[in-house]
Image 1 (cartoon, rainbow, N blue to C red):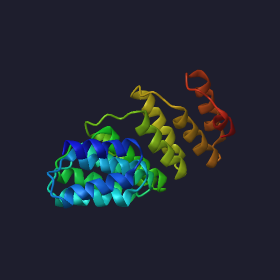
Image 2 (tube, helix red, strand yellow):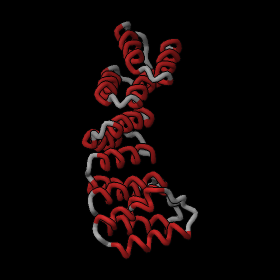
Image 3 (cartoon, rainbow, N blue to C red):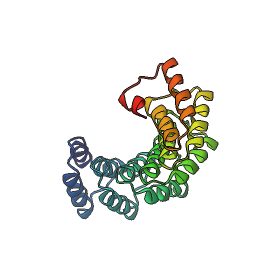
Image 4 (tube, rainbow, N blue to C red):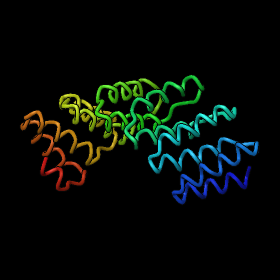
Length: 216
C-alpha cells in the first residue's frame, strides 16, 4: 500500500490524474489492501485537473471497496465540483458528509459556495453560507468573498452590502475581491451612491486597489 500510495501521491503532485487513476485501478483489481490516503491522492489529482467525473468514479469505487471517506475525500471531491461548476453535485456531497458522519470544515463549505457562485446560483450559495454561520465552522475571507461574488452575479447588491457589513462586524479581513464584487453589484443596480461610499471605504482601508476597483 505504501508503494502505491507514494506513487499515486507523486502523480497527484505532478498533475498526472490519468496515471493516478491507472495505478488506483491496478491496485483495486489486484485486491491490494487500499486506504483512504491512496483514494484521496487520486481524487485530488482529478480535482486539480477539473475532472469531476473521474473524481466521482474514484469516490464511488472507494465506497464499494469499503474504504471510509474522510474530510480530505469530501474536500477534494467538492473542489473538483467547484472547478467544473457542478454545483448540484457539491450540494449532494455536503449532504453526504452528514450521512457518513464526517465533520464539515471551512474548506468544504467554501468550495461548495464557490461552485454555486460559478453556477450562477446565488440563492444556494447564500443558503450554504447561512448554514455555515449557524454551525461551528469558521467563516473566513474566502467564505465571504465567494458569497458576495455570488450575490453580485445574482444582482443582489443589498445582500452583498449586508454581507460586507457582517464581515466587518465579525472582524474578518476584507479582500479586494469582496469590495470589487460589492461595488460591481451596486454598479449593475445603478446604486451609484452606494458604490461611491464603498469606494471611499476602500480608500480608507488597507485593501489594495487595482484597475477593476476603479472600473467598477
